[in-house]
Length: 195
Length: 116
Image (cartoon, rainbow over all chains, first blue to last red; front, side, top):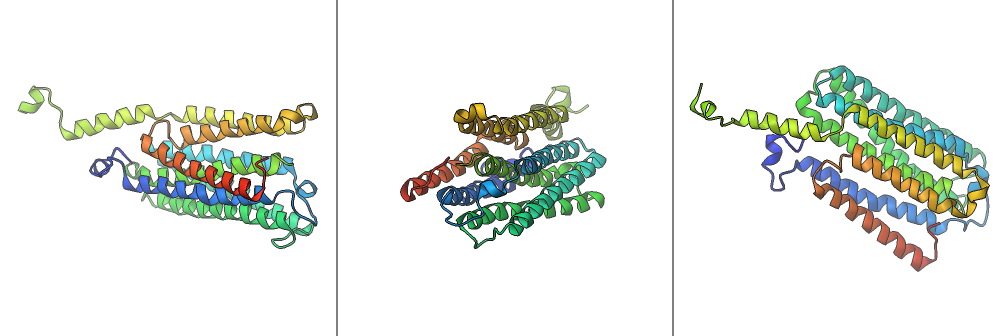
């Protein structure tokens, strides 16, 4: 963490790994900004169906959004646990976060399958292309996040994550919360606000 | 007792421990995290609830954007600790968001898309 002696020896006085993570997240803003921009640019311009209003199931997606939001709470509780040296709490909250992430991914897989059965594919119309690319990229980020969480969980179970290594959890948490805030934006702009 | 101890001068270990205490004191505890989580859950429920109210259809978009911005802000300030961490991290995120916003505005205004 930034208050470790090693971190204070850096030019900025901050931990370089944390600084790098924030730089990475700043670049991710541009990636998702361009994907959301592409979706908005082509919204309502599909000349053939299916259209968003025929497919979107708001109650179902709301539950998915809620699940991902709650996974951010369990993630931050995992960080709080390791910072106070609570190994059992760390394992429980990491596992909860990974399971909630998997639940979100299952929901996304179900949604994609349903949309596909309704005739929407990556190449069926502009909506299909921009929607699947945007939400697919987000889903890929969630998948990477779940893999990171499971790796940390294995490390925690083997006793290789101690209180002094809480930065590992903090960095994973930053990535996870970022994925969550991207979904907050997607949920509102893509699902709830429709022309 | 050493000379430094007798004069009340703290060693590096004590200073680090003190710094740790100050840092941890600035971070919220699990209870505060849960409270923020509950607020986020309530805002999500409100978002979905007002989506179905036809009477506020005209003001639905601005309300949804404001609620979404509140959720975004709560997560980055509390869960990502920007409220407690170095300002540099906040500037980095703000820079990324600003560039993304500029990119979006240029693309939409040039190619004829709409934000909402």
